[in-house]
Amino acid sequence: MAIVPLHLVEGGYSKLFSVKVLDSFGGVACLNDLGSKQKKKVLDFVREQFINLALQCKVVQIDLRLTPMAPAYRGEQCPKVNPLLHLGVENRLTQTYVIDLQYSKEELWDRLLGYCRTHIRKAEKEGFVIREADSFADVEKYYGLHLETYYRTGVEPHPFKYFEHIWRSFTIKGYSKIFLAERDGELVAADNEAFYKKGVVGWTAAGKSGATKGINNLLHWHAIRYFKERGFEWYESGEAFPAARGGKNKGLNDFKKSFGGELYPYYRGEIVMRPVLLETANWLKTLRQSLDFKSGN
Image (tube, rainbow, N blue to C red; front, side, top):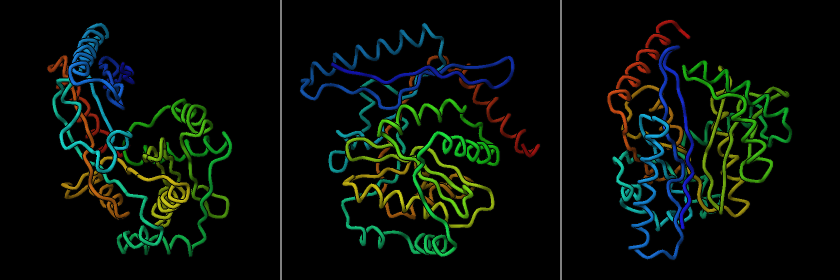
């Protein structure tokens, strides 16, 4: 009657301290023909199982995320209220930029902000070309770029197995595309897009330090055209930060906004199981990031 993607995540904040989180990207998918009373019973049961599993695994919290690219929530069907609230979660609603690919290619181009179009033209003139990853060797190159990007921005990189899993379980099976930007045979940027039932979600991206300004604009514009030409209807760029006034989040928001998308709700919710431990973990995380920044790592 329902299915819930859920996995256990363990993160270390020091050699002596780590926390566990139950993470669900996709929320609860119920049968379409469930009546309101049946659906409530199902959701109540799911919440009960969440709590039992959280206690068993000794997690600090349960995180749930639901993208507006879920087929039942696209376009005009997008709920005005966070559907995760029916699970009794704390509301952590945020937002994302969504591009309607049902416009013509000319209209999509016109909807780009002016500086975005300028960056794209510049990257094209400087000889950058975009191609699809077609071998595991390309994934290995992409991972090297991922390491460089994350170390540069002070974020802990994903393990190589994460990218290996993307390639073997998604890309090869036709659920994601990895686009590579190169010049003279050198990889300078990469972009990975997941897709399902005519909806596309930006997944991972990486870029070389000092690369020509605009290469990422060209890369994403290529992806938008690629999926438009193949009949896809919606493209979601990832979480947006319209209130950001500076720093990394403002840069991310400005980049995503430049492609002409509109703000849509991005549904998030959480159930905190061990608030004191969670607060301690968040404090340690902030402290570690501050120390890493000061040391230049």
